[in-house]
Image 1 (spheres, helix red, strand yellow):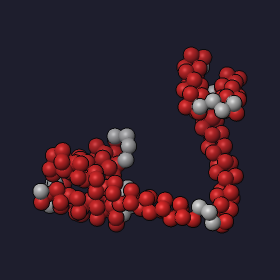
Image 2 (cartoon, rainbow, N blue to C red):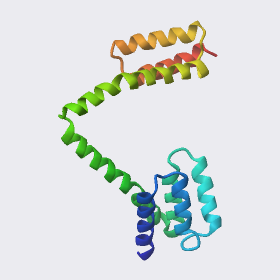
Image 3 (cartoon, rainbow, N blue to C red):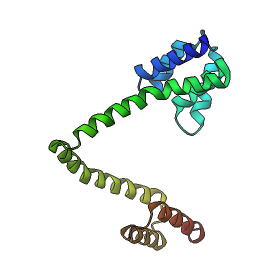
Image 4 (spheres, rainbow, N blue to C red):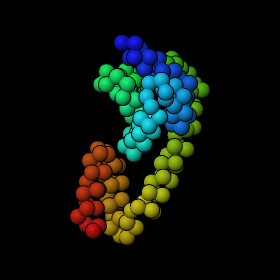
Length: 171
């Protein structure tokens, strides 16, 4: 039980004091190597969490927690890692919920909308330019997808169908 409390406290502290990524790895190294895990175990954990898809910080937490106290340790480390950002997001949401009727906030969002729209178009163009087919087939898929979106077709279905058409017609 003492190990689980120590794991909880360490991962809570690391996730409150860092923004994740390399900063949290350095802080976590200082907190756990030699106390809870060996340097070899920590290097293995960092390597494994770097190659797996998903959040490196959460995978590192689960790996270290599991190495220290098995499955309960992995759960405790994961909980302590997600607790600070979850509470922060809930707090920000509560503040924004109270401010939602403020005139300056709606003006701020109205100002963001065109910029975000242009940013999305720019990113879509870069993706299309680098990875998509720029022949008539690629343009046709893009045009049909755009028309489907204007007709309020579900975006997920449009994307899946466009991918399937690409598989069969863009070999």
